[in-house]
Image 1 (cartoon, one colour):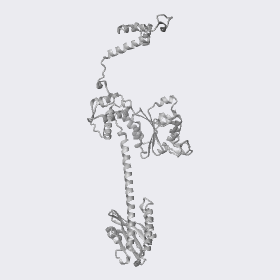
Image 2: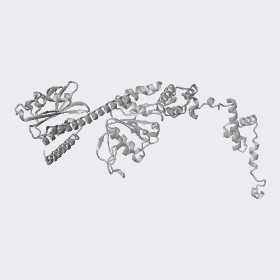
Image 3: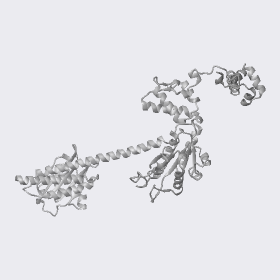
Image 4: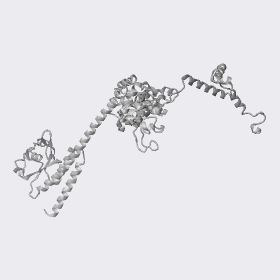
Length: 533
C-alpha cells in the first residue's frame, strides 16, 4: 500500500469514527444508536453483515442485540454459550479473532444460517471483544468478502477502536441508568420520610385537644374537601396542612404554599393565577401562577384573611367553577387543585366589618379545623421541649441531656402567647447558651423568668401593697382637683365621707395642694406677676 493509499485509508477511518461518534451521541437508549453504528461500518468497510452480541451474566448466554444484514429469524438464531464458536471464544478469552475464510475454520458455526447459500470460501469473519475495564460484556463482528490485499490486522485495530467507543457509550448509559434508579429510589424514600414526618401521629402532643386535631386530619385526608385551618399564630397550622397533603391521594403531586399577607396587592393576582406576556408593564414572558403549578396536588393559602376584596372575588370563582384565567389571558384553565386555607384572624368580625366576603367564607369553611393554643395544651409543653432539644442538639452538635426542674417550672407556668413557635425559639436559645449539658432557668428569656428565680419577689404583703396603691390614687386625685376633696371623691367614684376617712387614715393634707394653686397667683388680682416682679 503506497503513501497515498495509506492517507486515504486514514481519512476514511477518521470519517467512520466521526460518524459512529455522532451516532452514539444521538440517544440514551443504546439499542437505538447501535444500528446506525453498524450501518456506518457497512458503508465504510464494505461489510456485508455485522452483529453486536451481549453477554447475559445471569444465564451465561450470548445473544445478538443488534444486527445488520440479518433477518429477524436469523438474528434470533444467533445465540451462543461461553466458549462456543468463534464469538463464544472471543467473549470468553477477551481476545479478537480473525477467520480469513470461514470454510477453513471448524469453530465457525454459522448458527444464524445467513451464509448457507453463499460460497463460504469467499467470506472473511472478524470478531473483537467489547470490554468495560477488564470485563467482557459482548462482541462486535463483521463479515466481508475475502480480499488478499486487505490487512486484517488493520481491520481488527479499527474494529477494536469502535468496540471501545461502544463500550464507553454502554458504560455511560449504565451509569446514567443507575443514577436514575438511585434518584427514583431516593425520591421514594424521601416521600416515605415526608409521609412519616407529617403523619398526624408525628405532630408532637398527647393532649386531648391535639388528639381531636389528629382525628380530623385522618378523616379529611382521604377526600378533596376544602379545609379552613384556624388558630393563633405559631400553633402549627402549616404543619397540619402538610400532614393532610402527604397523607392524601395527592401526596405524589405538588404542595404549593402561598402566604397571602406577604404578597403585595398589586402582584397577588398574578402570583395566584399567572399572567400572559404583555398583560401589564414588566410582563415580558408568560408565567404560570401558583394554582397552575399546584395542578394535581394541594395549594395552601396561609393568612387568607388578608386577601383584598378583588382577589377574594377571583378566589371565590375558582372555588365555585374550578377554573380560572391568567391575568391578560382568555384561555380557561381547569383547576385540579385541593385548597387548604388558614388564618389567625376572626373572619366573622371581618365579615361584619365588610372586609371579608361572606360567600367566600362559607366556601372555605366546608371543613374547619381549629388548632388549640399552647396554653390549652399544657401536657404537650414538655414533649415539645424534648423534641426541640433533640432537634437543636443535632443541628448545633450539642449534647443537652436534660432540662432542670426550675426551667421546667418556668416553661409550665408561662402563658405562651407565641405558642409552639415561641417555645421552639426559647429552646433553641437555651441549647445555644448551655455549657454543661443542662438547660437551666437562667438560659430562658426574661419573659419566662419568675420572681422567685430572679429574686424580685414583692416585699410587701397584699394588704400593704393595696394600701400603698390606694394612697397613691388618692394623692393623684387631690393633686388633680387642687385639694378639693369633694371633686376628688367624685373622680375616684367614692363618697365624700369615704374620702375623708381615707385622708385621715393616710395622714394626708389636702390644703398643700390648695396653697400650690394660690402661690401661682399674684397678691393683687389687678397686677400681673411680671409687674409685681
